[in-house]
Length: 245
Image (cartoon, rainbow, N blue to C red; front, side, top):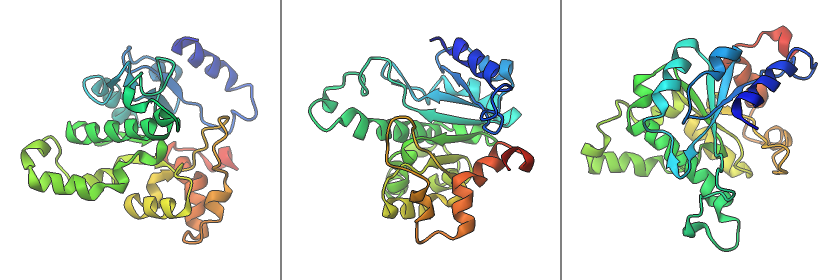
């Protein structure tokens, strides 16, 4: 199905479904194509891929949708979209057992995507832009120390950004909570803050991340659990209380 067909079906279903009436629908765009989906559908956000046939999309393709997103105030969700039938685009490093294209490859795509947004200066150029990355934000939140150390060690490679790396995660970059273990969630909260995290499931693909993962987290209070499970998105997408009651 073409992206335009998918967006049109979503738009048609939205006012007719009591479920979609309380779920804010987001358009799907391809970064390699024109930015028309959000403008035409007047939806609250867009979802997009991070990789087009082996090329990470955080480079030249980003500014078009970044400008639109930062000026009209909608959120962009970034996930991996496999165009070649196998995640990893056939890279031999992902061959063998263990489903490495998914297990390692998908979070790696998020890591590269977020890193390029930071280092190429895109987030500084569009300070109103908010992007939520799948896979717990990739590996970058767990290795911010190395990022800082590299900039101190070789500052000429970090001239594209204007702020410390962690500041982007406190303001513009968000992540879902698909890290599967409580200690991983605790670390994600420590690095990003509760306000930058949203509940994700990847349904219907069977990942073991139910709401209990948040509800049973012993280090979170009730207000923090409510924020992750929906409060942050209610605020981000500017939903009214009556819509989400």
